[in-house]
Every structure is written in structure tokens, then in C-alpha cells.
Amino acid sequence: MKVIVRKARARDVEILGKLFEQFSGWHLERSVSIQKAIADSDGELLVAEVDGLVIGFVHQVFFEDPHHAGLNSLITDLFVRKEQQGQGIGSELIKRALESAKKKNVKEVHVTTREDNHEVLPETRVQQSRHTIRIESLLTGSQKLFFSETCIS
Image (cartoon, rainbow, N blue to C red; front, side, top):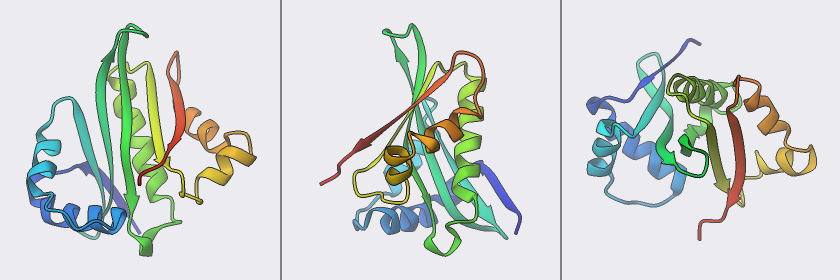
């Protein structure tokens, strides 16, 4: 299976809407918001595609951080369809997001997840941030990745 990671395009809006709904469980009209995210120069929405089908995405927002005197980013969403999970597609999406951050000289990349994300949190809590260390190994120089958990109610 060959996975292509690329920037989202206008033609991806409908499938991205379906993936966001599968990801969140919330039925919302997202097409305008997705179009804005695709066009936003302060962020990027990347998709993973297999055989012409978009099966996952990562959304990263860039922002100026006066505390660190430079650009930071926040990975707000990462999702891969259930049928394709566990095949390294999410890792490839993260890798590409981090490469983009590096090209922009981002000083820190922040990642959040839901408090009930048991696929990621046991690794970060019990194994002393193994997940974070694995992601940090993709970065060089003064960049740092901060992993935090959030609860969405």
C-alpha cells in the first residue's frame, strides 16, 4: 500500500467532512471551516491518500510565540480511518507535519489529545513519554515537541 501525504485541496472538502465526523462523532456542517483551513496561510491541513482515496489527515496551526521569541505550532487534529489504523499512516502524517514545521524554523511543536485517547496516553504516561521521544527524534536543532492531554466534553 503506497501512502501519499499531500496538502489538502478544495476537492477534498467533502471527504474531510466525513472523516472529521468519524473522528469526533459530531455531525456538524464543516465545509466552510475546512475550506478556510485549506486556504489558511497560518496553518496547513495535510491528507493521507491511498489509491486516490483520502483516509486520514493532520491539521497544524502556526503562531508567533513572544515567550520563545519565534514561531511555534500546534497540531490540533490527527486522524486515520479505523480500517487503516495501525499501519504507520498517522506516523507518516506527523512526520510530514514536523518536516513542515522544521522548514518554517518552528521552535516548538505542541500536540494535544483527548484524555480518553487510550492508544496514545498509556505510552506517554507509563513509558515516560516514549511516544514523544519517538516524535522528537524526527526533529533536529533547538526544536522541541510538547505533548499534553486535554479533555473534550
